[in-house]
Length: 329
Ligand code: UDP
Ligand code: MG
Image (cartoon, rainbow, N blue to C red):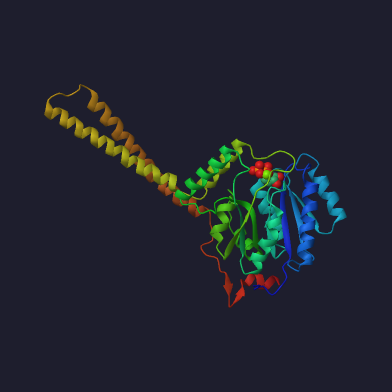
């Protein structure tokens, strides 16, 4: 069932950092997919592929320039240095949203199976503004990566960070949704947690994540770990609250020690020096943690305020897409 009246212009967005080995193949495959979508009248003829060169040190940019000369549907964007995967995606969305009606972000190494692009576009045509591509299994991952990812999603969920499990940055967003996302002014960009905050009707499609076709991963373990920590601390002030709870627990332990000392006194067998030392350590430790938690709670409020995240996002006005959209049409 199609609910959209217009054939959308699609922009495929690829961040690329030192991807000379794989980029030509990827572009070839994506052009084939784009052409078949155009033939099926699912996307318009002027759809394009935008590659964001994230400060590559190899031949990535010259490959992009060469491709740009030969193909009218390829657009290159060069960042002035290596900003990282997430800022590169944001740069691609900022530039593409000036042209495209829908945007799909995917990795340059073909791990995000391009065969599901068609399904994603169909989900948009059915009325969704955001379509998440979700991995149906993690069999191609190592045991460590599989389990650390599971632990990460569990911990994040427990701390109140809303994310679609097993979804990374392979997703479709309509222009309306991208514009809403771009209103978030924050510097710590963690898109997979930001996109759900934007709202709108969304859908999921499932895919098998393949192996990297060529070149090396740009996410070594250390980078992945700090990415995970950043992801959680940018979206949750729960870790600060835990300090408060921990402080109360520690004071509780001091309480047990006091009760035990009183009991020893009554029984008449006190251990010399033990109680004064232990009680003061635990009591002061607990008070310290509580004080930190209280200060932290205020810092947490400052943290959420300085983000200036929009309080609401209008989806439609008078039955039309948001006003901004109307003005640009
Ligand atoms: N990437 C980027 N900037 C970076 C690191 C990575 O634009 O600083 C791009 C990279 O070229 C690829 C995507 O982000 O298109 C995902 O990176 P990679 O495949 O190395 O990560 P992995 O799949 O191993 O997690
Ligand atoms: Mg990869």
